[in-house]
Image (cartoon, rainbow, N blue to C red; front, side, top):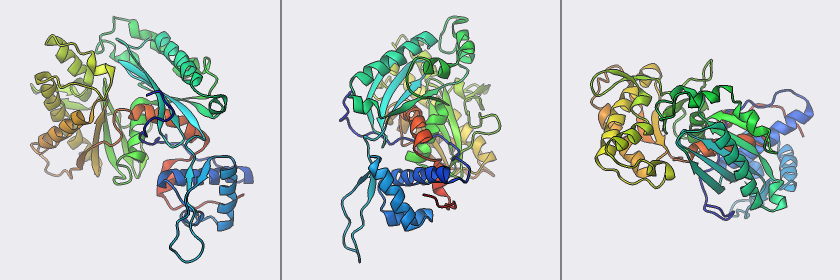
Length: 415
């Protein structure tokens, strides 16, 4: 997809950012403007009265804020809604063309660079595959890709780019053998500060977040989050990763690694103890195909265009489902999650088969004393990591922590 008039995609999810503190007029006003933009984005369109009611701000304060945001081109007036007593209600919407943002998803087999607009539509994207990621290849892809995509924009559009957000796995060197990299080839990543290296080559602010955390944030806001305030999340990529959502906010834990999911111990088909990532990861399917003399490259061409590989795929799905079921029971034994959400870098029909098989396998386990969560499909899909990455600059500059929107707002008015 390379046109600015491309089809709508799933809206952008936020990182979990702390709102600005302080009580001076400038900072309070900035926070209130972010809150108004965030509410409009969340609900798709709100009138001044709706915003005043949801925020606790006075009607006058809301009017001033929305006039400023409309003047700056961030908000657009919708069609008046008539039929009620008094003046018609005029909903305000985010202006899709007010802000653009780049997002880089760097995986262990492929990378995607996307340009998204203010409401989360992916306007343009580039894709690259590789045997395993190396810093120079990634840097070249990003710098040339941004130059190419910016070349398709006019000067006014280029001036509206908020930045670049990177969604990437951490500690890439730890799993070099599993992805088939030569011995020592991935050690170079120990000395690379990817965020700093890219920032030195591009003219935009650069943000970085773990890829699985980015995907989990996408699901929280634009997937099942509104229906399930607490869930454990599994994203099956080259390596499975995930996240934990508690009280409608991502819980990252003391070291930031809570919900990593991949290292969770499960039983293999022969009863041996293995890590979840050694069973329910796409690299395992890749190896199974290769062992059977089947070219696995189509797995990485496009996450939406997989073919049905028959027996090896079905075996991988069943093995993954057994492992996922164990992981879900283990997670539910610690926290009474309302849902276990499964998504991945594959087509929806693969996701459906994985989820249905996991439901079947979970029912076979000893569930005494366990309150099982709903085992459901994610709603965001294969682009969740790229969407999460592209959201980072937008939320850092214009919007506020999504968790604030699920709580009763209590803050000072300021204009």
